Image (cartoon, rainbow, N blue to C red; front, side, top):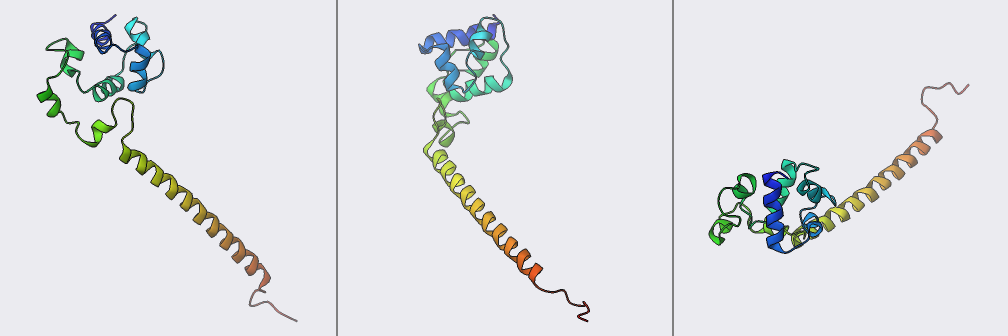
Length: 141
């Protein structure tokens, strides 16, 4: 077990949550963190970013190097670049605004699809009508 995974295990223990629950919160596949803790898999920088963004109380310097305190003070958490809307997406939940935007996108995608179908129908009618009109310049004799 690397020092980083040891510190991560220590943090999970402090939070009194299971590794499985921790994996769900940071949105990684089942077993990824437990394998890393057992020394069978490494933790990529993208996963470390998810951990730091999901658990704003963890001191990133401590997690990466072991220096400093495990948990950030309230003052440091308040000064964190994560504030407002970003914090609402943490701990596995989506912010209400994100959900509303997803619903709006879904509605607009459906509306766009309906309009595309209407356009195809008009194009189809135009092609049929064009086939019925005799071409100019043909000899009628």
